[in-house]
Length: 132
Image (cartoon, rainbow, N blue to C red):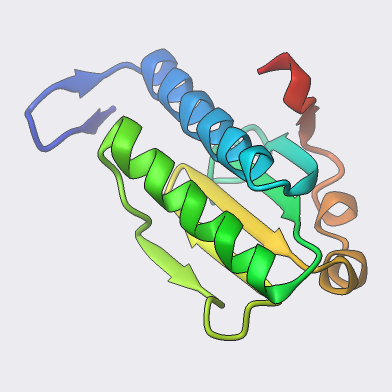
């Protein structure tokens, strides 16, 4: 179990609910900024890296950065959380926001196709964005 700063202890089920909520918020924020091909992978059953990966395509560096900022703002406003680490904002072709239990990848189409994260993590359950 994980202990929060307010001394509240969460059960594994509650942690998964919180992770799912964070992933859903990231996907919603990306959708609001017209991010496309939004994919949520429930990777917690196949790796200890995170519970969910959220992948989004942006069609320009400006859009990739806007989606990343929108996600940060929505999650901070709603869940009072900031990413543990954020990489790639300066370049803008692939931004990674690491929230610990959820890792968000916002990529230009070329990077998304080249690295093929969905294929690499193909053994993880794919959660359609519409189900959230």
